[in-house]
Structure formats: structure tokens, C-alpha cells
Length: 290
Image 1 (spheres, rainbow, N blue to C red):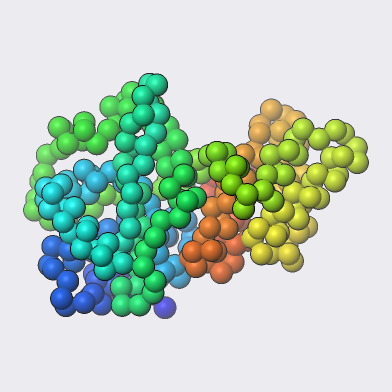
Image 2 (cartoon, rainbow, N blue to C red; image 1 turned 45 degrees about the vertical axis):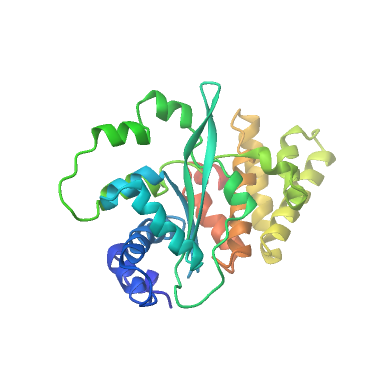
């Protein structure tokens, strides 16, 4: 069992995991790795992962260097050492802001098992995921890494855990962001039927599409025993769409994310992760209406 779930406090858990690092790893690289473990563990708990071997999250590199109290150059030197060791992977991602393409921050994948496991490697879905769906609004409100850099006042020399959490941990109060651009990938074709249900003609066509969507979910999540449960969710989502609330893009994105979790060995039960993520949205009660 990973220390992630034996220790409730992410800080203590990160220290426990970092103890397994190779003694030849530079001290600064160890410190950066331990700091990155904290948001990784917090995100794993927020997303209800079961014994994950790695976790991916979004956070601007500037925020991480500020939280650690080191320069960007020092951070990147440590990051390169950790990437060479296969302990992390990271990539800058971009978004559209006021008609211009801007950097929204970096996506980080952190391995929680430093002494065994394959090298970290970000997947296509992780890089294309909409990590900051409200990027325009955030910039308009002044929530940018540049503004944080200008206004930040360091209180102590210790790691600023609150700063890390504010910028990197998913919130249960908000539904997962929707990014339907990944529909173009062939591997997601089976789930695209979810996006067609609301346009079905009343009668047999509707029944057929609901059943097809339920089967698609069961297949994608490797959970054929729960077809009736998925059928209920799809039917209730259809009823919600008739009241003007379109939940199908959200269902599609959550299903893709749950399937990626299974493929990346974050969880063996895609259906359980899918359900857990739906419960974290504001629409669970709507989907469970009889």
C-alpha cells in the first residue's frame, strides 16, 4: 500500500515517499520532488484515486518556484534531473486569452513510487485536457502567475504549501472542464455517441441511442456489469437536456478521464472512478432523479 493512503496528511506522506529516493539524487532535486508530491497526493485524494502509481496536475512553474523560494533556473535544473530519473514529466500548455495564444502554465506528472515503476510520460489526453477552462476570466480578474509574482510576499523560508494548493489542486465545487476537441481521436469514437443522444428523434430512435450510449460507457470503462446503471444516467441526462441542461459533454469528458486513469494504472475500476467524479460535480442529484 502506498504511503499516499496510509498517511492522511499529504505533507507527511510526501516525506515518507521521498525517503525512498536514491541517495545519489542531488539535495535540491529531492526537495523539488517532495514539494511536487504534495499537490500530486492532494489531487489523488480529491479525484478519489485508488492506489495510483502517478498523478497529473496543472500548475504554473512560477508558482512552484515561488512556493519553494528558489529561482526559475534553479527549479528547471532540478526538474531536468528528476525527468532524467523518470520521476516526473512536465510540459507547458497554452490557451486562448483575448484572441491571443498564451501559456496557461505547466502540466506535471509525478510518480509516487520512486524506487520502482516505469518512467513518467504525459499522454495525449492529459496534454489536450482543458486544465484552465476559465482562463479568460481568471486573467480578467488578475489571477495570473505574473500578478502573483509581483504581489507575492514571502513570510518564511519554508515551503509555501497553501500557495501550491491554491494553484494546483482540483476543487470539488466545480464540475470537470469539458474539452470536446479530443472527439477527433479514433480511440474516443465509441464514446462520441454520448454527444448524439440529445438529438435523437422521440420513440425507438431515442431508446436505441440511450442503449448504445450505455453500452459505450460500459465498454470504455470495462464495466459491463453496470450497463443498467449507465442506462439510468443517460436517460436522466436526456431528461435534463429537455429542460435545457446539457450534461452530455460533461459525461463524455468524465468518461474519457476515467478511462485514462485505468490505462495509466491509476485505478483498476473505471466505473468506480467515473461515478466518484460525477459525485464531485453539481449534477449528481440531477443524474440520479427517478
